Image 1 (tube, rainbow over the protein chains, first blue to last red):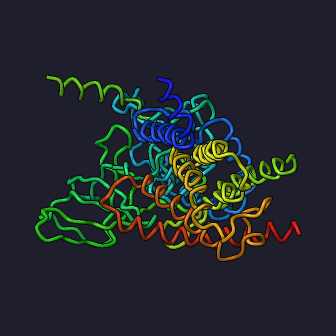
Image 2: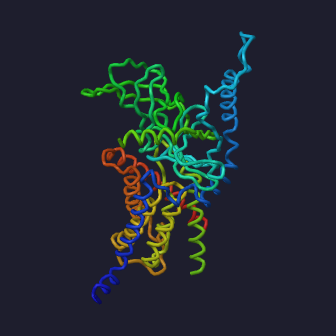
Image 3: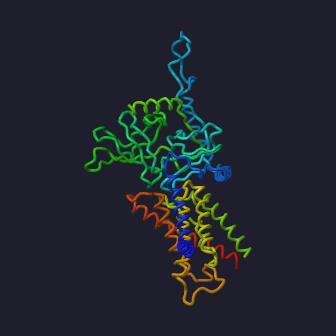
Length: 276
Length: 170
């Protein structure tokens, strides 16, 4: 026993090194699993407050671009609002409408930290549980899909961006009902890859890629990107599509958090079916 | 002694802030990323106890991790760097050993010594870090390419910063 202690003491540097490495490796593994909340990340108190202070200084630089973008979005929404439609039928009955039930609610937030230059990228938002943010809420910008909420603290949250090795967003091509999923190969922050669409459907360059609505996270029909390049690898039964993301990940400022009010019901039902 | 602790603490805070607020937002040709903050470990004096070296490296890594959502990765890479440091220092020691009170700087040790010292350690740090981040062997060559380019990028920044810091002192 004494000689073991002596041995460890003599080689304390190596043992200390191994101790630190094992502890760090433990943290890496624990943090890597998407389902588990981690305790030290950029939604933690110190990091998030620092980022918010820095954002309040640098946030002014992108205002012009951001305003233009929001104005364009307002324009679209105005066009959709009830005021922009002429009423052709005068003798309309007013009744309590039960055909439509609200499924999605939206919440705006500001991106206070963002990265696009790593293999796995995250964003930090300035809203948290106090403002109603929950894990696995969808994050979209006025241009398209951004990512999914990963961790939430009281006033901040972190988002797993589409630019992440674990990111798989269920999509389809506008006008066709075949579905696949978008992954990111890690090379360029403006382009993603779609692999599961079968070769017997016709796809053209410039086709719009939208969310399929199959996951309980994203509503159907949100823009994800457009087809940039089409390739069929020999022996493959599906296309390898290069798509250009509609979201400009390099300049994200204001985003929306989407919560699905019927999510629990859908998940519960699907789980029941699977168990039988 | 006290002065040294003060200077190093100042460097610790400054390098972390510079890394997470400025450098983490830089992208050049895809997703290269310089990690200048390792300069803190590189600049610690030769007499730093080995155990303390590991502890400081761990704290440095975990702080950067906290800001970049990569819990444990930077800590692992930094601890590895700190583990290699004494070995590299012995391995490339000049003829006649190190003078008492010498610091790991260009002024005290010469440019060639400094270049190999920082070059080897930065490369070790980056290789572990980038592979941890990607965490799959299928992208081995693209990771290697990025590792080498980023190491070069970091090395240049380390040299520039080193000259700025040591130029101010004299």
